[in-house]
Image (cartoon, rainbow, N blue to C red; front, side, top):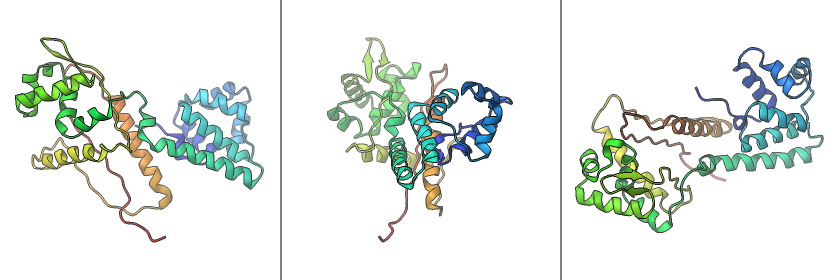
Length: 272
């Protein structure tokens, strides 16, 4: 189950209530201890018109183990609720919007990705072969070019060519009798000139997989109507799902290659 995220909320009290209700019994008392007040005061804030202070917000961030971005947004939520004028509320709302916009950029959510030169990106994202071979090297039984060629169904000369490029880019290492992984995670920015080609490569592979009709695969397409205010919430759910997958993906004794793709976009354009 994916954990709740503060970025889905505009009311810090609702968010805190949900966090506390999903935790073991007695969490409200532990929170009160963390911010050095009585448990009754926590209830008074969550149920009434009082608000936590900025100093207490910092301690709540530590209690909830918020990331740096989540901590900033949570503090802004409290400042927004405490604001005494509409001008101040509007100013803080703009700051909240900036934090949310930064959260929409995936590379800000996955900061550990390696950097590959633009010249290498132009080659690597020109064909699905490069990404597939790069990931195949993570599988112990596929650390030879002959094994990779057989597994992926790519001609051996082509695999050798791909491996040479990956070695030059630092993504794969040649250890003589076998290959090993170099930089295992590479994130292509949303504004990269090669991002469209990368998505196209793997959407084509997804279309090819439809012909296999394998029950273990999942293919889902749906067009829906939704409240404009809820659209960002769906996007956040999908991004959280990606983060959950990334936490699940880890080395194991028996590995295989999989591909997953998620699409969420607005259909049509409105007249202004």
